[in-house]
Amino acid sequence: MIENIYDVLTICSFGIGVFFLLTGSLGLLKLPDVFSRIHAAGMIDTTGASFIIFGMILQSGSSLITAKLVFIGIFIFIQKK
Amino acid sequence: MFLAVLIALAVSGLLILCRIIIGKTTFDRILATNSLGTIIVLAISVHGYFIGRPEFIDIAIVYALINFIGTIAVLSLFDNGTLGDKFGDKTE
Image (cartoon, rainbow over all chains, first blue to last red; front, side, top):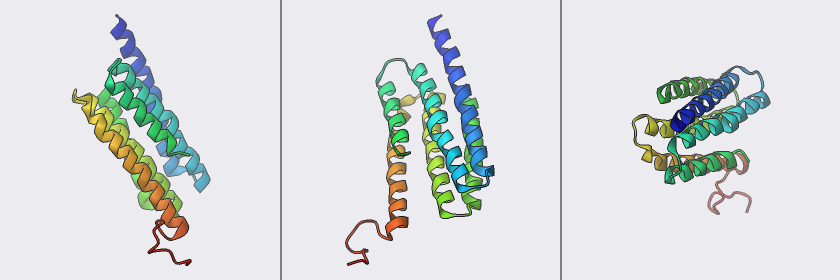
């Protein structure tokens, strides 16, 4: 039962993340200006990556993999200054 | 579930690759390459879960660090004309 709740939360988190990833990449392709495209790329690197990493953290439970996923999230975040 | 995320990551990567190919200015290409690196890091992690071996996350960590250093290096080269070494420095 508790794993079922984790699966549902993972699917919700993946859905939100995939939505922001597709929106950001479409905006990166179609927006008219350089600064607008920077806005769209920030959409990918913050919200999309965060929600997908959060979904994988929910799947991995509490182990070393969780710490590594948190490190990946920090590394993706700090390269956006 | 993981397969759907992988397909979405592939579509997103193709759209970003179109922007890298079109890319009107250098900043567009640097920005899109950085985003493609993020997409690839996420794809390596999700692929590890998809085939049932999440140990692929180590490779994703290394790829994220190389992506970060590479973006900083290209921006430094674009800004200064050198990578910070004394051999390529033309000011002195």
